[in-house]
Length: 128
Image 1 (cartoon, one colour):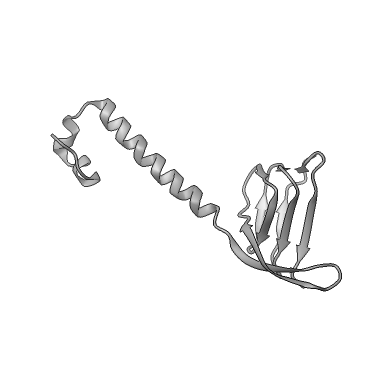
Image 2: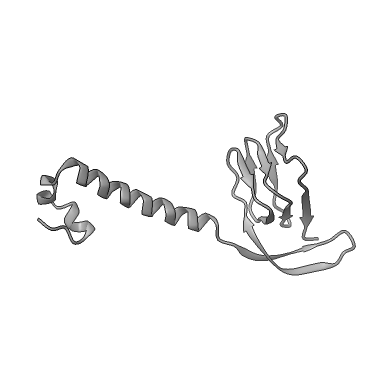
């Protein structure tokens, strides 16, 4: 029996295939779905910030932060455009710039070394 679509895979006659073939097909399906989720989380947005002198800087491409547990932030620009919370350590993988949108909050747990990055810089900017 030849399986041509995912619908064919779930047909009752497809279950006569060996367990290894079914496991391989399901593993492949999970890999595709996981990759699609990772792409969705790494989308960027255009935003702006206002520096200490009051100058507005437009057209900043940044990755939205979503909160969660421990994470590593690579060098680059990030934006907090919703209220978020981190419960673990944030490791700086390079010089990190975070734009905190007006009215939004970023909460980080109060453990030792909550934000860690030896010889790295963390810059936090606002929008007003």
